[in-house]
Image (tube, rainbow, N blue to C red; front, side, top):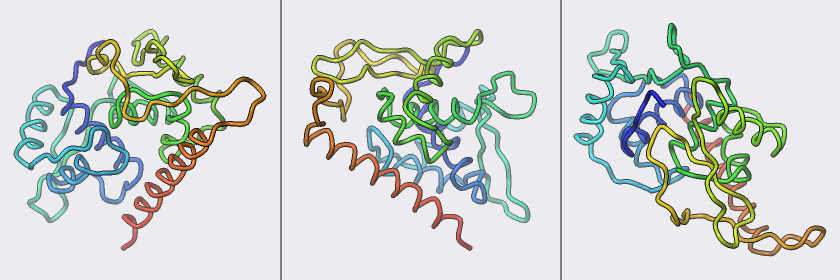
Length: 219
C-alpha cells in the first residue's frame, strides 16, 4: 500500500471525499467547514471534537505529501482544500464511484460489514443490492495496485465479517466495532427484533445524511 494514513489523516481525507460527492457546490472546503465535517455526529466513528489547529496541522502534513491541495476561492482570501488521494487529473489511483463510496465510508467509520456499507454508501453511489457491495469489496481487495481493503475475522456471534480499509492500520485483534451486528437466526427464520431495529436505524441515518446534503445545496 503506497499511502499510509494516521487516524486524523483518514478523517480529514474521508470528509473531503464525502463533501466532494454530497455537496459539490460547497467544495473545496474552508478550514472551518472541514473542521465541522470532521466533528459531525452523524456518519462518523468515533465522534471527535477537533479544533481548527489540529485540522490545520493535519492538512499541512497531508499537503507536504501531495495528498491535499490548497485552493483560494474566486475573489476570496479564504484558503480552501481539496483532496488528492485519488481520481484527480494525472493521479495514478483511480476508483469507480462504487469503490470510492466504500473507501470513503471506511475512512469515516472504520471497519464495517457489507450490510452496513450497503446502507451507508448509498448516499455516495448507487448499489443495486448487497451482492454489488460485496463485489466492490472483492475488487478493492484484489486490485493489482492494491489491496485497498481487507476482510477481518468474524467476531463471535456476528452475522457478517467486517472489512477495513488498508490506508490506515488495521483494527487490533479482537477489537469489536461500535455497532457490531448480532447473530442472525437460522435460515428461513424471521429476523430478530434487534436486527430489524438496527436495519431501521441505519436506514433513518442514511436518510438524515441525504437530507443534510440536500439542505446544504440550497442557495
